[in-house]
Image 1 (spheres, rainbow, N blue to C red):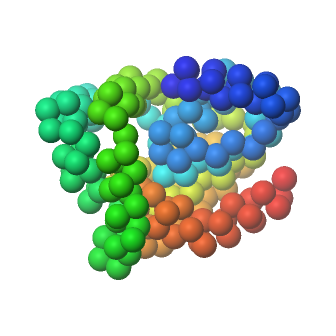
Image 2 (image 1 turned 135 degrees about the vertical axis):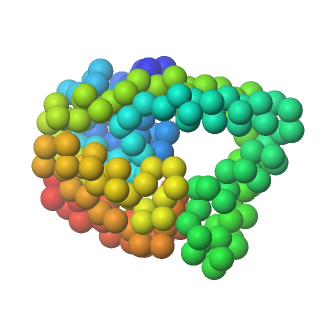
Image 3 (image 1 turned 180 degrees about the vertical axis):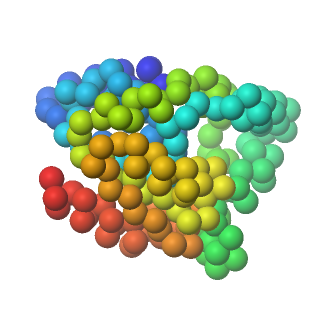
Length: 196
């Protein structure tokens, strides 16, 4: 996560961007936590979508390793077959075939080396729970009500641990709320950004 954060700061420097509002979805949220930990002066506000502060449990780490092995042995299609039912809400799987296709195709476009590298980065990320009480910028936390990866109850608890954070629950969405319910997510982001 540190490398991703460094790359983002270098990009902001190259564009001569001052304090920015950053938004991270899932793994992107872990990068936002790294920015908050190491570069808090560079953030004006943060939006955390479908993510969590805690590090992987031993069981979750084993799951990442198993998925890495699946990618290496069977390719991206096997990863998509396993992940798509977990990252999308039941309502999305039943009623939004275009979103199911889009997510599947996104996974299939990734090289196996990239999938494995990302899974290792996810597995080895630090625990950001101790950071939550020290966050001093406005924060919006957005959760999907049918998120199997970052359950809404845990995200609401995370929001309560961040001083003055706002929490929004998106109905009928899973781990990819912006793809599953873009209008509802946009309403939440617009309202939050309008307060800054």
